[in-house]
Amino acid sequence: MATYRRRRLLAVAVTAASVTVTACAAGEPSTPMAGDPAATTTAPATAEALAAGAPARTFDVERIASGLDRPTFVGAAPGDPEALWVLEQPGRVLRLVGAEWSVVLDLGARVRTGAEQGLLGVAFHPRFATNDRLFLHWSDGEGDTRVAEFRAGPDRRSIAPEPVRELLWVDQPEDNHNGGQLAFGPDGRLYLGLGDGGGAFDPERRAQDPASLLGKVVAVDADATEARWEVVVAGLRNPWRFSFDAALAELWVADVGQDEVEEVNRVRFEPEEVPKNLGWSAYEGDRRLPGPEPEGGGELVFPVATYGHDEGCSVTGGFVYGGTRHPELVRRYLYGDFCSGTLWTLAPTPDGGATDVRPEEAKVPQLTHIGEDGDGEIVFASAAGAIYRTVSPGEPGPGPS
Image (cartoon, rainbow, N blue to C red; front, side, top):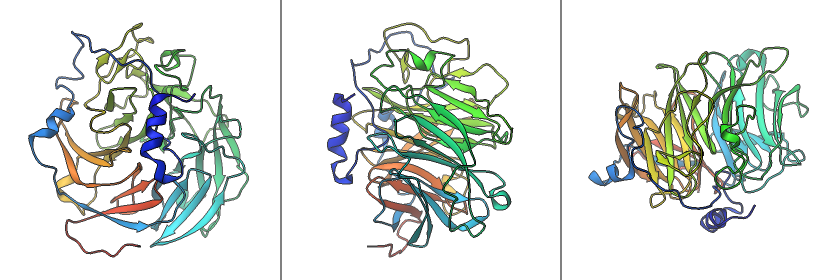
């Protein structure tokens, strides 16, 4: 479905040889309505809050690898702290040591690569160091969602090309809003974020349909014999990256907006409760849209931070920082935007909100993923073909040319 917003994003990303996997579809503009409930006891932090001061220089970014093909993920694997693992949208899994990388799996023959399709997510089993198990999420030849388990070799130089088992197949009605994130939660289950199936303003209301996995964060016991996925959070448009803050039992979800609002959500992790609802497509951010109210009976959760399309156009979620390289960032949530490359951090508040939203001087072009290395330090993937890391301001570092 070629829409205005996807065409506009293509123009932004033309230098990357492919458009971003986080693009949004367009439709009619949203209409703010008076009397909307507050997100929490604190109002969402907005782009206006950023105008209070100049961007902070908390860190600089250094390019550590280049020449990659539209990376969609970068992060470390348990038991392999010296390496970074990278996904490329067309289907390759890479292992990066220093600036040198090797291909450990090529799923290109199985993967459809499009604007928002491709190899989108990976999660390593918490005991990957001893059991070699990992899980991949990709778009198959028909454009549908697949999640399967694979086995890595003991030397971590290869992954067996045939999956051990398939955990999920989901029909995708459109070629956008595929979500992408895979991650293990604090309860040991495997979590997946799925978009609403595409189409402007979720015309079939899949995000609010309790019988559909689309527009949801879902979870499964990956150690069980039979994979039974359960909805954990509903009412999502295109959750491009979520993360867990195990210290506070919270889930942070960045949801790509429609025409006006990008949003960051902070959700109390309560897997035994009725799934919480982030409001799409009744709400875009904290703005009420025409149409029915949210369904399902779960608590309606509003974003703790938003920004408009004068600041960017496609949010990329990150995580609550717990490393040691940047003490001033500890317990702050980091996120960014694909189109502008802007990075922000915010401070969670005890009442479940957020404050002190601030932009960083450092930027990452075509930002697709914010991950952690083996020391819990920040790394970034760019669809322009590069991997970056943070360094202290002014710290010398050659990086690749």
